[in-house]
Each structure stands twice: as structure tokens, then as C-alpha cells.
Length: 232
Image 1 (cartoon, rainbow, N blue to C red):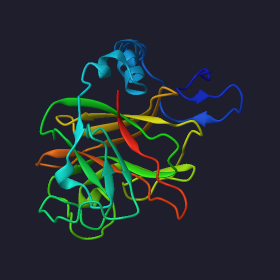
Image 2: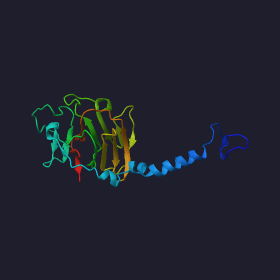
Image 3: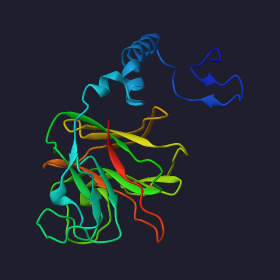
Image 4: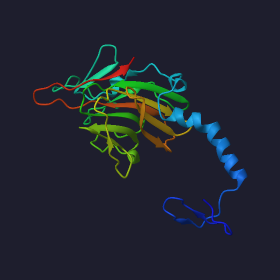
């Protein structure tokens, strides 16, 4: 409420005084109008809307970039990490030390959406990276080095941004939606099953093509690794 005789606002519960002048009536009307106009856009940004699904891409994995220990399906839509070297042939585009593979096509403009089935994997990384990332040496998957990804480690998700952020992962997370808006320099990650936003990167500072990025979990001593699969 507002005390009579001055312009201070006093909270009716805690009685704390707000020294700032109250909003004018026209400001309240303007804020109400903006909320009505942009509320649907805000709501869309928090879940996988029909508008986002319009930009769904058909994608395959680029075998020429796959680490030699990765096993790709015949249709190039699924990948998992094996225990032996499957393709020792070296190439300039191949990840030599890190168990990664890129997707195709790559993107230089526009809006694009795809979904990845992560299944029961307990350790994986997906997102996008710059075309020029170092594929021949071990390095961290950081945004500073051109990786805009999320990584699952146990029960938590870690974006590659700095400082490191920890996000609790839903126990039934099994499919991740990725929405890339190159022109707006933004990428969003969604928990598709729970229709919820996981994380958003803004200001993707890249003047070169962005490639879909996949890094499946390492196999245990006795168990095989869980695959990453493109959907549908």
C-alpha cells in the first residue's frame, strides 16, 4: 500500500518501505500490454512447441569424423562407443582421441531442431560445435573452445559454459530436443518426455558453420555403452 502524504510504498505484510516512486498508471498499462503480447512467446521458449517442431531436421552422422572406437549403425542414425578400434584409418576430419562424431548437415544460418534418444546412458555429451574445433588432441568441451553442449554425468547435467553450472537431471530423461537459432545466436536444450527446458546458450560467437555434436558414454569393463540415436 502507499502511505498518504508521500510517495513511499509500504509492504502490507513486512511493513518494509520502498523508497522508489510508484509506477505511473500508464507504465502499468504498458507492462500489462507487453505481458499479454509476449507471454505466448515466453511460454513457447520453455517447452517444445509446435512452432519449434516446424524446423525439425533429418540428420545423419558423419562417419568421416567418427573416432575409431565408435560404432555407427548402418543408417548412420545411431552411435555407441566400443572397446576395440573399428576404423584405424586416419583422416583430417576424424576425432583422434575423443570419442566424438559430428552430424550432417551443418548450419550457417536459420533455425533447426532435432532430437536425440539418450536412453539409459549415464554419461554423454550432445549439442553443437564450431567447424574448426581441435579434433586431434584431447581437450575440454568448453564454450571458449567452440563447444556449446550439455553433458550428463550420473544424475546431473553440466553445460560447457563458464563458470560451471550443475543442473539436476530428471531420472526419466531419455530424449533431448535441441533447437538451434543461428541468426539469434542461441541454442536450447529440452527434456522432451517432461516437456521442459533444460538449458539455453545465448550469444554463440561463431562466424563459421556449426555442426551437431555427439559423444556417447564409454563402455564399462563388463557392460557395453548405451547408444545415442537420432529421432524419429
